[in-house]
Image 1 (tube, one colour):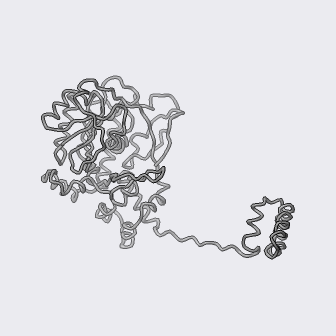
Image 2 (cartoon, rainbow, N blue to C red):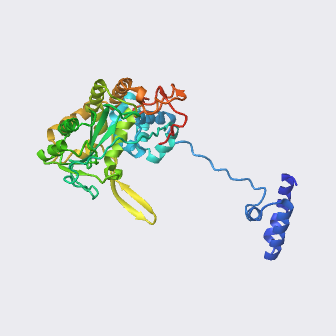
Image 3 (cartoon, rainbow, N blue to C red):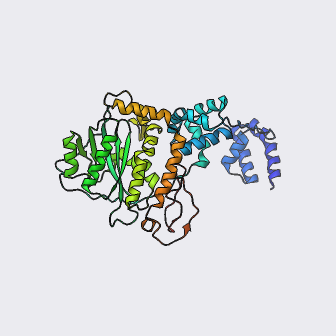
Length: 422
């Protein structure tokens, strides 16, 4: 039976079906299913649906509110800012607006749309632009045995209302070979303001870590009151404990094998270190000097003055689901202002820098320095370049500031996970 014949038959019995009694409807339905070979549920939907021959109402699609010009400007800002999350990007737009006006032809209508676009719309409109590489590497941390009983374990969750208490961790730049001396990035993240300072150190020597911690303490715009580390021997030692005791800094450690205890700094390990320098090996004094030059200058200012971040306020259990509530996105400098613990001279200097610096220009300088640093990497001992396999020399992955510092000219093994996510 052809489709046209089935449709003619359906038109013939439709009105008879609606005028018939309940028992007669059952017979008509059985006959309809047997004749047209329809599933019973499908036949019921047809007979109870709209009358045949009535044209379907086509819903009109609304034209996009935000045009291609606005999306191109938004994409350029998103790329220059290091691909932030849409909620952070919305908070970043008013802060970057003076520099956006200088670089783009921004009419009053475009400016109004740029400041009114929602995070969900940003996610949808920038969907085709979003790429992120997921890479994995096992850590190089070895547990420290000395002084473990003298340094208390922090068991409670962070609940501080003043700047000065932070988490610290070490990120390895060893590639796939842990032999010999190579660079590490020492990260310290303030819990209350999310202010982050990073320094590159050669090896995991106790004296080098202590010297980098002193440098970080001097650079912080507030007094360091407490640090919390993992159980690695680079932290659990007499040098660092004496440093904290002399300055009356509270020194605690996390539980062994519980990375969630240091979740704040673990997140910064990705955004402030691994996302930039990747997984290749750096083991030269020249690379250390170049990386520290980036950490102390442009990257420090870019991340702490121009990058809003969100903080978890509380968690609400709703049945089997856990709902997380966050505060409005703010930059670390915005969170720091107004606290008596902050150094007024350093804060005033930072505010002056905020007005004089151009985030787009900072982003370009960071790009150039990352390219130069990448040339200093020891590629023969990278986690993926030392294996045999197909080469993707032209692949350019989304580096944090529009570069491809850790993706370009790298050999990927056949089973290497190059999953792109956002």
